[in-house]
Amino acid sequence: MAVIVVGGVIKKDGKYLLVQEGKGMVRGKWNIPAGRLDPLESIFDGAKREIFEECGLQVELTGILQISNKTDEEHPFIGMVFSTNIIGGDVNIDNSEIIDAKWFTPNEIIAMKDQLRSYNWIVDAVDRNEKNKITSLDLINNI
Image 1 (cartoon, helix red, strand yellow):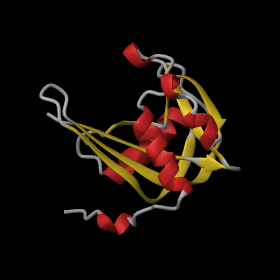
Image 2 (cartoon, one colour):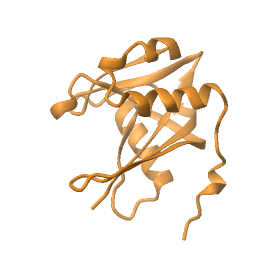
Image 3 (tube, one colour):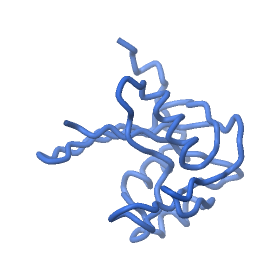
């Protein structure tokens, strides 16, 4: 069964929020706030839930930055990254899953190649957000 991961880029004062993973083989790696979609959960609700769980911020989703697909017999992957606006909360991490959360400039993120969980996934999403290459949420139909 495919793993579906949803999350979002969060920008404030010219910087993007990354969270430092606290579990397993990715411990210590930085990532955008994201996680697995729960059964019977919409991708929109899942992205907002994962962002809140990982960093304590309530967001509205404003568009689609990226849809990713990795074909792998054991772990097929589909990922969706949304652009967001903060609508509430303060950065607050759950230490059982996340070690830290910090704000980084786009150039700092680009320079973190070995420190990012998935370099291309994160850098491409930030780059698309910076260049305002945001696709409307209307692209996704609820069926």
